[in-house]
Each structure stands twice: as C-alpha cells, then as structure tokens.
Image (tube, rainbow, N blue to C red; front, top):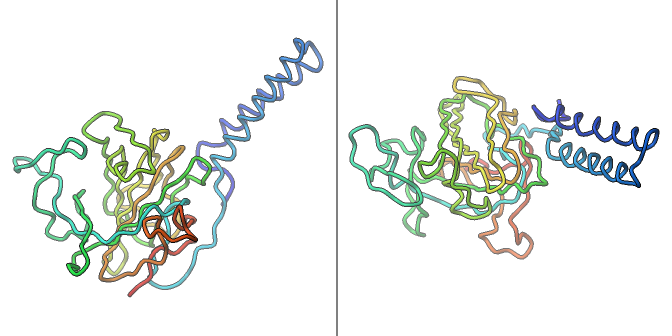
Amino acid sequence: MGGFARGGIAPTVTWLLMGLAIEAIAIFVDDLDGLGHVAGMICFIFTAIIANFYRDPDRAIPKDEGIVVSPADGHVMFVMRERATGRRPGKNESSIHDELTGDWHETPCEGPLDFPNEQRWEAVPEGEESESDAWRIAIFMSPLDVHVNRAPIAGTITRMEHRTGKGLRRGPFVPAYRKESAWNERVRTVFERGDGLRVESTQISGRLARTIAPWSGEGDTMRRGQRYGMIRLGSRVDVRVPASQFKANVTGANAEKAEFPKGEFVQAGSSILFTPV
C-alpha cells in the first residue's frame, strides 16, 4: 500500500508537531518579534522535505511474461554489455590489489551469470560477444526521486551481500552519478526465478546517502515489483542480466541521444528494463 516508506512516519510527524507547537506559542504567547513564526515555518519546510523523501507511491506492475522491471526510480546512466574478468578471492587464494576496488582473484566464477560472488566486469568490445556476457543498467537516483527499491523479477533472494567499499568501515563515498561509485558502500542482491534465471541488483550509496536499508533477506520469496528496501538520499542501483537472454528496453545517457541527455527516466516496479530475446 502506498504512502510512506518504512521509518518515514515518525520523523515527518515529529517535525510537523514541532512546527505546530512553535506556531501555537508564537500566536498565543509571544512571537519573539516574528522569530517564532520563522522557526515554525522552518519546521514545516523540513516536514515537507522529509515527507517528499519518504513517499512511497503504489505502482502498476506490468504482467508481461519474462520481463525485468526497474528496481529503482531515476535516470539511466548507462546500458553496457559486460564480461566477468575476476572475482573476490576466497581464503588462501592468490589475489591482486587495486587501490579503488580492493582485492581480486584473476579468474571469474565458473558460472558468472549465476552471480555467486561479487565479480569484476569490463565492457565487451564489438565483435567479441559471448554467451557468458551480462547486460548492466545503472540507474541514478537523485535526492528528489522515490528511494524505495523493488524486486526486478518474481523469485527467491538467493544471495544478499553487504560490502563497505575499499575495505573501509564506511566509504569511500564517490558521488553516485560517477561510474566509479560502483565501489561505494553497497548491498548486492541476487534474485532467482523459478526457471533458474538469476538477476543481480546492487544498491549503491552515494556521497549523501549513508544508509542502505534492506527490508528482505536471503530465502525470501518476492513478487515482481515488491518492495525489498531503500537507500536514503542520492544514490544508485545497478542491474545485471544474462545478455544472451535479454535485450535492453531503455536508453542510457551513454547513448548520447538528444532526447535523453541524462538518460531515460524509469520508475521502480513499472518501467521495463529488459525484454526476452
């Protein structure tokens, strides 16, 4: 049911009541030469800002068979075909260190499209496509967008993994509209459909966003478009699917099309990102 996201009612009501109390004092007791009304208006402004941020409208979820819907509201930063070139190392495995992204084992997972672990990806040059490639769509969520995230497919959450970014407790916090923000603090969630298809959705914090709040966990069964978490303030969500099974249905800013200078705008749960080939 639409309205406020989890955790949004308390701060909204608190600021509203503070504003009403200050206004009542200013009207019936003493307005302190107008400062009371100014303080009341500031409280009302904060009430509006918080209510806008925590809004959680209902969405019409498309019922087309086999599609992948957007997990987030925002502009599509880019659409890219990628291949895995490495993975996070296990215990006692050799690794190489990258200053921005951390430690990597140079061999990708045996089944990269099962998304069993966080992997390192690179763009696929034209003419070198393979069956193990993935499509990635990155969605930038501005502070004014709805920040509730929704399941891109109907299925079970088989993996939910939190990473702090560069090995630090909190950070780094590169602005979410930059490609390098993929290595910010993040939560990687893998959804598995009944036929075995897996979709990877990664919630990524931005410079302002410091809290990723998953509302579901491993083993939970999700409906397509069901709410599964949110990110507070400006942030980003990346989605990967097997490239051999899907084609992208949206345009990213990297396409440099005049009609979408910031990339196509999509809405969580209702915009179709990928359709079956």
